[in-house]
Amino acid sequence: MQLTRRQFTKALGTTMGCAAIPTKAWGYTPKALNLTASKSTNPIFIKEKPGALTNLWTFNQKSPGPMLRFNVGARVKVNLHNKLPQPTSVHWHGIRLKNSMDGVTGLTQSGVENGESYLYDFELPDAGTYWYHSHNKAWEQVARGLYGPLIVDASNDPKVDHDIVLLIDDWQLDNKGQIRENSFGSLHDWAHAGRLGNWITVNGKSNPLYSLKVNSRIRLRLINPANARIFNLNFTEVTPKIISLDGYPVTPFESATLTLGPAQRVDLIIDLPENLPMFRLEIVTNTNPLTVARFALDPNLGRGDRALNPEIILPKGPNPPEAGPTALRVPIHMQGGAMGNLKSAKLNGQMISLRELAQKHRKVWAFNGRVGGYDYILAKANLGRLVILDVQNDTRWSHAMHLHGHHFWVKSKSNPVEDSSSKRDTYLMKPNENAELIFVADNPGLWLFHCHMLEHHAGGMGAVLEVV
Ligand code: C2O
Ligand code: CU
Image 1 (cartoon, rainbow, N blue to C red):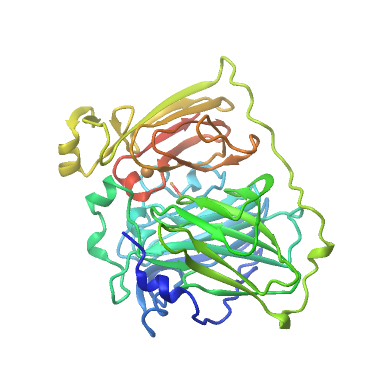
Image 2: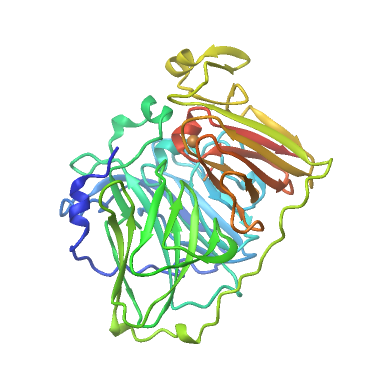
């Protein structure tokens, strides 16, 4: 689905109040925080239709949900209360936590029913930009708004004048601004690129304006909570320095453009030039770029002290170890989807044609000739073992492959990473790409490996790695 023309033309030249981002909204309290999943009505479409309220499913009546922000090493307690008409659960995306807290309905817990509560209690081992989202029927629940930011601070974080979190989402709305419900579960979406929206928001607003101090150093934390859209982003007037991917530090490099696959995050630093009044973040499209957020100087805010700040140096992790004879190599041959070469695949031990899989079972993707599911154990690794997921994307589609509970190094011949020490939790694979996702299996439990194009996951692109 294309972005609407109306949004293109309305994106520019409109006014909107300054949207301040609470930076310490929840503080560091040792008490359990409350996260209530419920229906709510939110003004995400208000720019197109003044006064419009969209029926969403949200955490604490907001989408994005409340900013959860803690210091690295903190113990977190979150009490989830479910007031939705469906069971739900919360996954803490990218956090290397204990398996029982991973929040995957049907794998690490059962769904929290309407009227029930569930206490999440875990620690935060790594600083960085993360997010949380529903992990039951995520293809519907995340699309309805059940997600929020999770930021972990460290004392050696670069000092900045502004630290702004931006969750960029696309919604599939009808012309009244309501979620198109009858397109949930569209088999076409599941077999193609996934559910793509026609309305873009940043932090739940259309084209918000952020006010900046003169001479400031800004950290932007971009998060893609969209079901399936790959955002190709561009900054006008400034060339940011990218400092981390999926929360994990990289050797800083400059780039005005960046690609953000579903569930991925990018942190970047912008040192505002003295005489620059404003810059914009835009989505690159085949036609005109679409502005999605604006940043403007506000002299009333005073001056930042960017000039006093040194170059950014972040602690670097090690390179991936050599794969010795004890490394566990796990071949993962991804097939399926529209225009693919999958003729049939195994489901519940039976070989079934793709046509029947699609029509009767709503399954269209497979790993190694088998439709994915939570009963599909791809491999069992002993604790401490080096694991190499040897992933072959033999489909016509891109896939945002996410591993729970671990961060991995990436080796790809066709798409070499700049900094071989950097790790990710979600890797965007191009059609026909072959990549090695390398990690030390240091966290026991049942860990999901799946495509974060949520329709692809629902359609069979996900299985389990067991660490024992
Ligand atoms: Cu962001 Cu399986 O999740
Ligand atoms: Cu996919």
